[in-house]
Length: 197
Image (cartoon, rainbow, N blue to C red; front, side, top):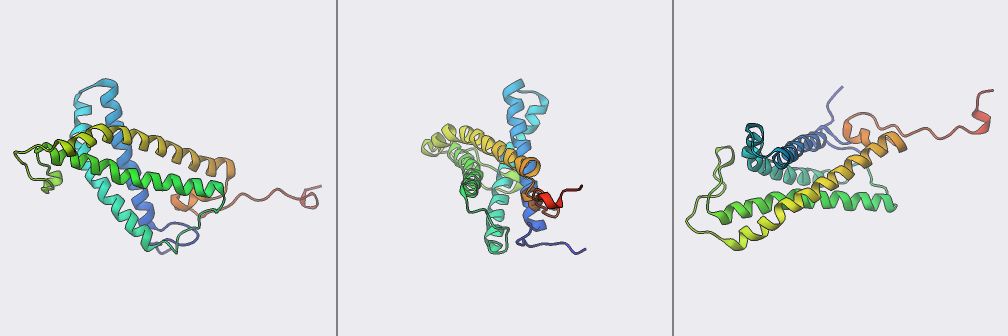
């Protein structure tokens, strides 16, 4: 069976699924590290997570931009969104998630830029060290980066909860579109003349 690279009206292709689940793992690592830091303070384990937090954030930002571009390139091919209230709420929730996945790491980069420390994730100099400090870039990032990240975590929890509802309550095949399986909707209830005797 050939790999399905592009999205179709039935399900998402391997690129969309890879970006989705890859970002899910990286976001889980980010929140696990920050949660451990808050719960137990600085330990060798939390130091590992904290030291990788900014580079992973940059990687997430790049993947998010790629994901948006890939989504736009496949927009007409993708599974259709419901047009009722639930569909509009899902669209708003996804939009808010994408906005925060762009905004949260961008704020962190602004904070790094304003600090003058410089930033070289994966050996690539993104921000050169500087003698000057720019408080006007540091302050908004300092105020909003962490708080918006926790808002994003709440939205992710809602996203997961809705995916589980689709899978186990509505059984409408929506989760299978991103999981990679065939989307199978729940069979309608049998009519009286279909009931076994």
